[in-house]
Length: 299
Ligand SMILES: [Zn+2]
Image: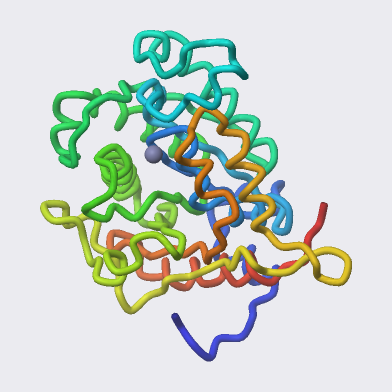
């Protein structure tokens, strides 16, 4: 973490971190790239702060259709009146159910647009390369991401940090996002960040430098992580905090039983700077997260 820098004014922030932003808009614009509906919980509090404290926008590009998330859906079977733990039933109904759950959570944190790429949620492997080669249409995904990034001129792109023991879909989604961003000319390139909340696989994350075989996933170890603490207080007598928002979002994903087990987890949302970024990316990420941490709630 960079030390000794003053908390920056919104004015300064708007002139540096938001350099690609249309002057008619008032805050930073973010694209989140995730593999499954519910992965966005990783940065739920930060997304909320961007839309509710910075006047920013958050869009989400979702790579898979979520049909594979049926194994722990038993508690949602009564809610949807479907045998969701049956993979054939799930394949038919779960993509629509999970989109609805995602958008209900997204309404809470302020997600503006969704881009559904509907790739198969299949492949029980840790090998992200086989997912990109044989399960997903990587060329289609790359073209869609190129188009989305070109159309919206985002300031930042959020991804999961692609640590080795993570689900192969998460790692593949991040690799495809990084490769899309690094093709963009440096003068308009958004800052792409890798994220992980504290309290999950902390040992693996502390030793992460890059995912083996994918040098594009290298992070700048000396730069960050830049953070937002979900326990930041808000409300009358500071009795509330942003874990409430994270819990609300998670609760919307009722078909995802294991995600519900993260209800009540506190933590710090952390963002690392990938090395493919421009040289000023660390400063821009620092400025963004300083404001996410300190700006007053606006609505
Ligand atoms: Zn996931």
